[in-house]
Length: 120
Image 1 (cartoon, rainbow, N blue to C red):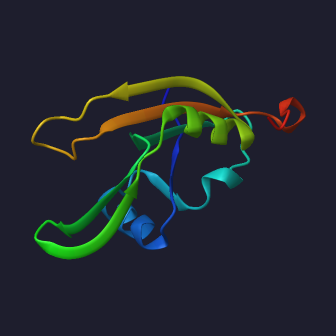
Image 2 (cartoon, one colour; image 1 turned 120 degrees about the horizontal axis):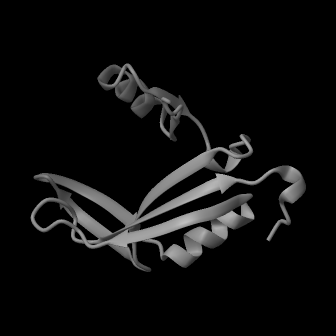
């Protein structure tokens, strides 16, 4: 049985680019806190930490860019407040010499039905 999923992206420009690169996948622009499909699944990926990492240069270009890292507990709390039930949390170390050297967090959550939502 084929699974049905939608990739939610915050930027409309990134949605268009993703659709061009992956025509067989459904991409939508939206707000993850406005998801309304009870029982639907959300897979959230983020960089783990409690600091802001600043870059003045990235890939040879001058930039002024701040990356906000999040602890899994804070992300879980925000998801629960938004009506999600957390199914699984996974953290991993970065791949050496391949990606930014920060831990990665992944949270699988499902949207609770309104009548089952306690608000906390």
